[in-house]
Length: 295
Image (cartoon, rainbow, N blue to C red; front, side, top):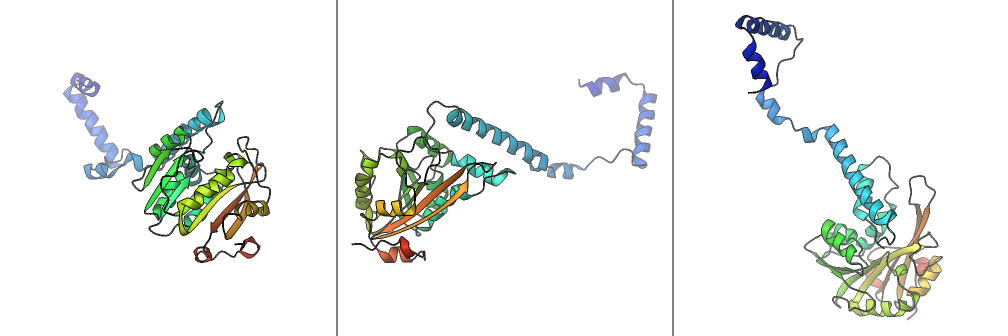
């Protein structure tokens, strides 16, 4: 028996009558509002309320932030990749954000992918860009990283039927195929020893179809990253690295703040290369001095 039923069973008929009379009188003068109908109650969704949205957003933010602190900030050997899904969540859902510049590389590389292209994504990290950007236009994306944990994150947060994630060493292991329309290397080349650039460029060239595109990005200058093994201080150094391998080279650079108090600035460069001038011309970038036309 419920508490309400137990109390009612102890009331005399007269007391019950008086209580009903008081309640009916209160409702007539609108002291007690009428109960909502069953139809109205059925339409009420507590999860759709603004309060519920704020609570769930806050809980998810706290959960993801704790993971970042545990596995990146406080870790003795943090992963080399970023948790980009968390960055996208902060950008979309939280009142304070550093802006969208950290995702610019995804937009620029995606522009190189035409509908139905086959794409190779070297050093894909957590697979955020492989799925959220490149797979939206490509027919298939082969994405790999040397870190097992990065591929575990990719399969957990960014799985997609058009993306194949594998663990492999870009230097010692063969690439998955040799018929790519676009090869993308975003935010990875600085983690490779300088002596491996010749080998890697040769593997990239061999993996591209005739007229294919090689695009990517990396930090420009010194940004405090202790795990970077090589650096480029200006666009001229970037072009000098790429020019021996591709007839046509385009380079673009920018800088942005990466923290909320705007005390930390990061420079970044972006490249597009091909042996086909027509492959680059379809994107309508103005090359100017960024063009290397040496054969």
